[in-house]
Length: 230
Ligand code: DX5
Ligand code: ZN
Image (cartoon, rainbow, N blue to C red):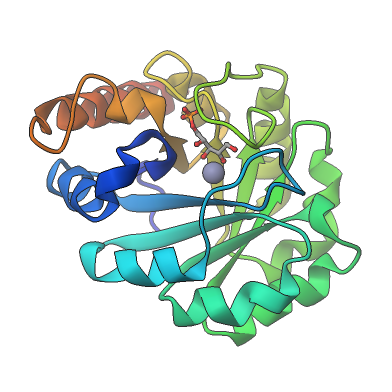
């Protein structure tokens, strides 16, 4: 598998009245994946959108639709998100008692399976599941809102996961508070995919998308340099 750094902007920080155009704009500006934050007002204290929104966005996304489910329960909605065109479906280990079954169901629906860990959850929670997942999402903020501050204590967790994964084809994704300042810490610790909301969308808009590209390049360069030096 390729270990090139990937940048996945979270549309949570984009213009909610223009999601389709925002997805096209960030792809034209060089992002690798599009990260979609699904929140249920129950597992996390915020509400966003569900499968119909993902289906509506699918024709506007040529890269990878990376769907982060911050919902509980997860299992009843897996097929709907798969049918909506998700390439990756990530579920939280904290979202229910049967995460192994959930990961199997995601793969069974034809998607890549991601496992998200809240900041209070240790790396060891992923250990029994490493052969049943394609991605581990390390939350570097408490999920629910964009624009929060990066929690530095999660860097040790990233390192522990990188060691635990060994040569398995599993990517480590970082979600929350990623900026050009924190991205290098993540890539040096072993991260592959960097989700960034505020840091990608700041300063730009659908009618002025160039800042998106500048922000993406800045984050990518900082992360790649730190990885090369690590
Ligand atoms: C938080 C979400 C993140 C968030 C990232 O619950 O999962 O994807 O939108 O936003 P920033 O990059 O602004 O922290
Ligand atoms: Zn997310």
